[in-house]
Length: 389
Image 1 (cartoon, rainbow, N blue to C red):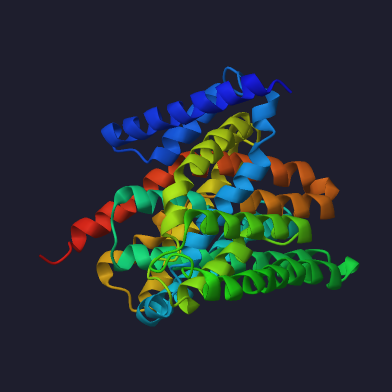
Image 2 (tube, helix red, strand yellow):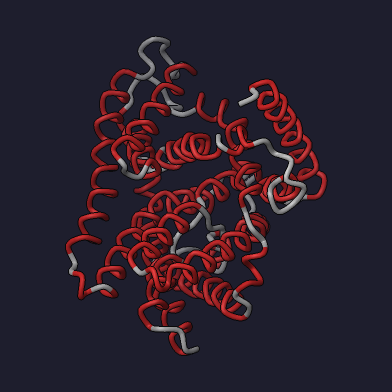
């Protein structure tokens, strides 16, 4: 590996990310979309100018970046936030996951797709992209009831999605028994929750003691890397582990008020590389390879998000101005969906190519068009419910 070329490329990517950030401000488009588009241009489907040494960094960088996002989202699950928005977070997240699974499953089955395959695709469709949604919220500069509730939903909806996926996988492969998929889900979810607690509880006690008032940057980075590394080593979800640790630190720490201030200060360079390399790994050709099936799948997921989000918001007693915004705000989809698709493809090799191609196609579509939908939803709610003077 030519480390000089790798370092030059990383430097150029950081500067390109800064340029994309400025361009997004001028165009009012989410910087996530700009970074993904830039990644497409320099990646394998564009000019293919990224050296192998840089693309090889995508997996560890994405794990660290997503764990940072998970810590920040977990920090939103404070007692105060849950007391104020707990019903909305629980009601909308469950409604969106259940509604997405059912509508995509029924819709694809009615169009002639094998019901088992359709059920698996419905479960995969429940996944969201917490990194993209969290960054759009941060870029918007908005902090209100809607953004707090949305952050809480994003923090837990993939938990429900993983559980639903495990149940659907077990239903489809009943001949192979229920034990394997449910045990896999229990290991992934339960192991991540235990790991998050093992790291989060002592970290909550220790953080802020070296420098009263807020944690040190080195301390924050150490906790993130420790969580990420242990999750990869134990083969559990680093997203759930980071979220659990973040929630525990936010609720139990007594030596400062802003548990993740330092993570916010260092997160953006990691996110630049994450979104650029994610864009470079996308394959737009997958969008057209399945033709009408990909279009129907995307349309059903959008419809399910909108209807189920509004239904959950109505049940939770959310103000009318916000009810129609949760579904569009939850459209981005990425890594968790691909992980589910890989498991499903391994379990059902005959459907493997269809599952993977369709999931990758949906990822391209929702990663590019999802963040603008999230930003539009945030701005619509802000206009309808302006902050008090």
